[in-house]
Length: 299
Image (tube, rainbow, N blue to C red):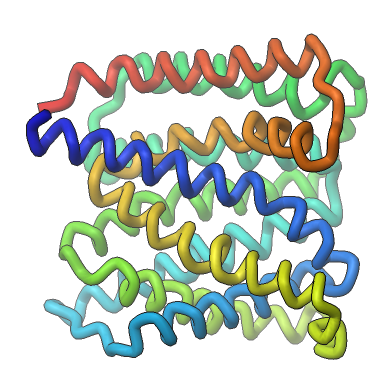
């Protein structure tokens, strides 16, 4: 197996691994949201995540070009603050099923931004795969239940969140191209994300009950979410982006609802329906179709 093939497979493995962890951590998030508000949980998990990265590598990132600072600022704003904060707000105003479908459109925005910034060229398979995957995700989200309720404010927030992640996925390539240390660069992005969360304190309630962290189950889940969702997952996601690019990495976002359902079956003993199986099949088919075209472009 040559180096290019190994690099390609490793990139896909990292992309899948990060999405797998993000999708399976929803159980921990659900437990923590019983003790903290969405904003409180968001701030605490990223602060703890930042401290975790600081402990494992207490070094300062030296930039090759001072202009790169702008990319770190924008990545923190889009991928940490805008994506996460607007996602939580969207869930408060709209149905979770609506939000999950809109958030799943993030790979489309990644593709559009990549095409607009001429990082990649448009190709038909990407859009065909996107449509098939979204149909599958819609089936998974509603699972045969007619509960679609449009809420302009909530749905707009979900779109902003999805666009934030799409733009982050493109901007992070500007950082990974520099071959900076992935831990130090991820920590710097999280730092700016935390900074951009501060203004929301003036509009949203932020008064976390730190006594809740004395409960073993809450402390364990907080550490688990901080270490994986706000630390390790971002590291391996950024690494995947550096290996196979933003568009290829983001295709794995389509798998989020599929992994979530599988985890819920294993952990929560939930039953799977034929409709859910159909949705999973279409979602996976969309991923494969999007990827087939990309494989032809491997050099």
